[in-house]
Length: 183
Image 1 (cartoon, rainbow, N blue to C red):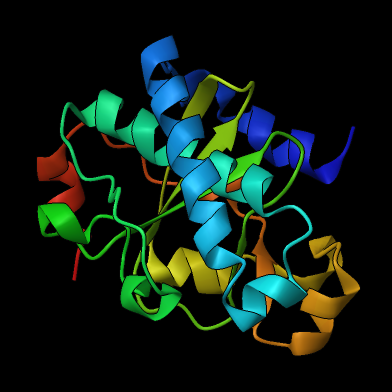
Image 2 (cartoon, rainbow, N blue to C red; image 1 turned 180 degrees about the vertical axis):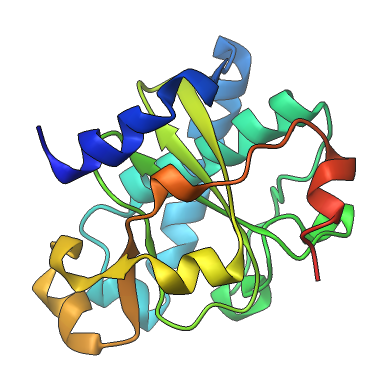
């Protein structure tokens, strides 16, 4: 059993599976086609553009799943320079909380120094996401490992690490519960 399976499965029965409808998937694909074209004009996207569509798809799918789970709207469908979007994912609803979504079997990549909590989601299929829970800043700092950073260029940068504490997440069911953790 892999390290991911080990920590994912400990609380798997507590995770919420959310399925995204076809019309939302179509909207996402159309948006990402436009987004990737714009991003390719930015230098750091030219350097790191090998799997951008897939990475953006995974991230936005997690956001859509969380919208559905919490019955709110916060996904930012605006396209622009990346520097405008260096904010917490849930800023639109007044929360300083990010969202990290990864493919099943991979640990989320986070900054070594985190400033706000992250909701951890795992993409199970192209339309299904498990919402695993919230990692507080303390949990994010406590459960880090470079061992699971697969990209040697990312490891060499030194600013990011893998979050391996999936078995230490805080469960939530509402925006009200999340507000307790937002700074």
